[in-house]
Image (tube, rainbow, N blue to C red; front, side, top):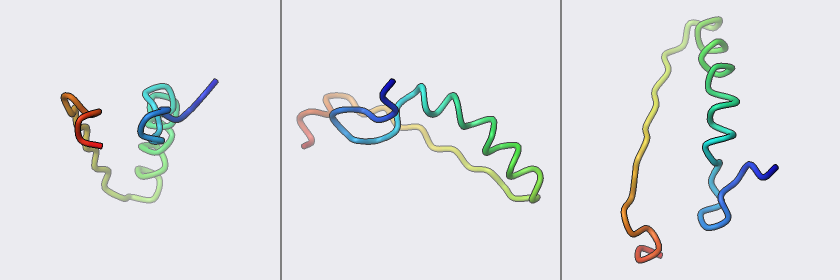
Length: 48
């Protein structure tokens, strides 16, 4: 199963869902803050 998007080469939603809880737990363990940014770009193909 692919973990990156073919167009952007960025991690896909499947990867994100799998590792978000792990990273939140790690941050809590080490008492770090967690930030999350989600962007939805319409007509992304035109930007390239």
